[in-house]
Image (cartoon, rainbow, N blue to C red):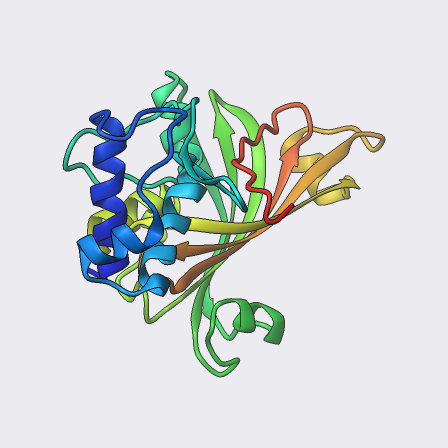
Length: 242
């Protein structure tokens, strides 16, 4: 395990165990660097994880403060759980039934833009699949996903119908830890109207995201077209600077 991940785990446990209290500053960076015998860069990487998870906030001139509203889902002591939770995890926890209809499944060379996002070459292969996600039999989204073959060499058609994030955690023992996501709204096309049961005048909510594992490597590029009435997204936003 990388050192910055170990440090973030320790600080997270201190917050959960109230060694660092909500609304109070945690020790200064040089103190933590000395305690953990690490560089400032390593400590910053650890803090970035906790900022993204919603445990702390950092403001120039104010220091690092434990947030007064911590994430609703807190893993148990010793449990490694993803701050990025997918459709299956979120909706199953709410008592909904999640299912998928696989429209396409293949290995292919990704286009240049997608290959760049995944840090692979265009002559390298990736899993490429499209699926419709359903919540209690109501269509939620159409997803088009690319995953480097070298990361999930044993991935199967059956795996693509379930939770990709849960599969990654189970097989790789790694965690989808962060995501860069763009949002937009677009007119629905005939494909979206058919699968999402939309009328020609109804729009779709669109996300384009690159998801990273906790070791820093990008593992998934996904474009999702959501039914606009069922799209819901929560995020933690950190302002940098003044």
